Length: 262
Image (tube, rainbow, N blue to C red):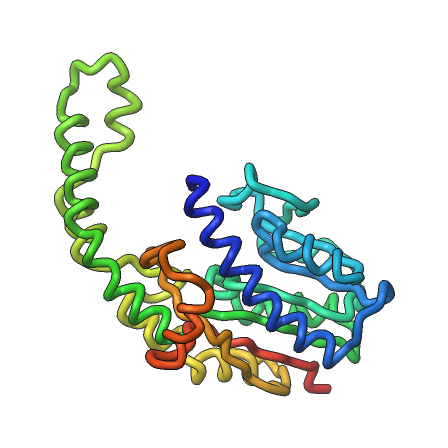
């Protein structure tokens, strides 16, 4: 990722965290005794901010994270399945745009419960149907650019006498793959496709996931922001403008506040 993309994502994450912090403060208050675990912390932008607000924070992510080189906070690597902390360690478990990337989502909910105190809360920011729809729609303005880039790679890889033949061949792109990567929007999460994700990212699906894994949904908020997976207009659209757009075409993420159903 380039600096433009990193700056764009960081601004979005920081804005969403402000809403999460207001929920957290209302539920738990602010003091150094509150222990928070952030799952899928990426660069650690949000973990760092929560620490600056007076919370005790731990952050974890997989070793293959796209944000390894951008980390601004101590983020521990883990295997994506087993949370490396003891039972009942945290008052709050938080994630932002992470759960859709966890294939064993139901089993993972039990891991979250294991490390969460009996009176703890879980707060998850998850993509909604609006995010999936507008990400698919904004895929097409990039179609010509993608076709040009990938076609060049196909032509380049056809030169078998290239001195870096092994490297080139490992990057060869078939016409079928070219079609799939340009004409059909790619899925974002770990299941289904870009069409079925309209359901998998819906409030109904997320609610059923949490209820089926015996969480009590205390409240569902909206992130009150518009953005897409293609960074539509990037920094040309301010956070204020994106807030106004969300009023017209819908918020792109849900924020679930959960407690143990015991």
